[in-house]
Image (cartoon, rainbow, N blue to C red):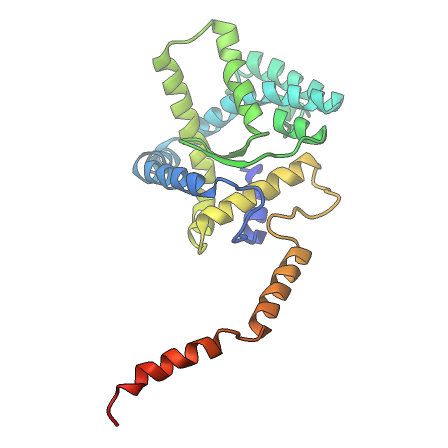
Length: 270
């Protein structure tokens, strides 16, 4: 839940832009967003609410710790690619401690021992190297990402530590594991539902919040300048100037229309 606080703050402060520079396939993304919402309301959200209401606290904490332990495996690579050796070492140490002493990650002993969780990934590493985000993407049954950040999803899929440890798993096992992961992740996002639903355009609000959050994470919370999501002030000024000039231009079509008006009224009896 503590990891959601920065996201919650960005959601509260986000301002959805009607035109977004990072969303060239917005109609397609909106269609997928609508599909995801339908599935969420029918399946995922009810399951997450039931999990939140009926699962004992240790079960919820254990599920969160288990998937967080898998995440630490990838965090270590993201940190290493950014030259953050200390964070990479701490993340690998967390995996070693929590996998052994913590019963395969169900108990987070590493945090109690002073090894705090880091928040790094492959997408952030590529961003720190100067790679642009690329277009914003809405993934079916997964949610928002960008072309750059999708590299992290690919790495997590093809380098799954459970597959490496236990060999390729049966499809039914993978579906079950990802289903449990999805329900646990959705449970943690329940507090944000009211904020998103209250927006005039939930899609644009979520998109802009995601892009801002990722931008700040690439720069470790201290970007050199604000993220420009929509047209710049100079572009908006140019558009306004063009519209103003167009509205003030003389109407050259009036004389041509006068004869037509006269002929139209000529046959009308007084």
